[in-house]
Image (cartoon, rainbow, N blue to C red):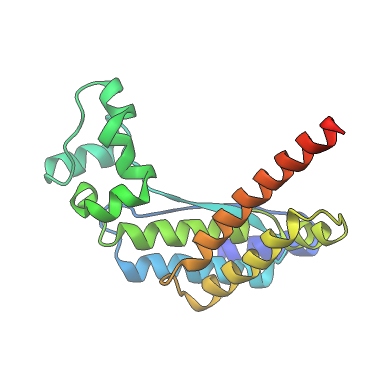
Length: 193
């Protein structure tokens, strides 16, 4: 209730609040994760000018939660800082293809792919406030239009808690890539002429 009330106060004062969430904590169940998604939606409903981010828990060296995972046998702690920051250690947190092939690398998480999708769509939705997103329409810049379209899709995914069938994520990532290639090509062409 305090979080919702703070969002209402910010909205009435015209202050853009920034909320940060962490999902995938040890012991967190899928219903807990969906409660976080519900909270994000409620915050947006009472304060459409809000923005923020959703991160996935990362067990840092020597922190209490990491040591608990090691004790339970859910994580093999790398021996050196170099091991923590390279190879398979880092891949299990940032590379979704690695996660889906080796779910056992995140034994404390029931569904790492779901966590990744929730984080992706929530961050897409929360990256800019509604006011900023509407402001993009006035800029008449082609690069904002795909973003706005996919932001609406992300918003609907948050609203309905639908994080499967993620073809739109692939389409967005490739649309942005094609846009950048086209931009570079046109820039090179204009500098030649």
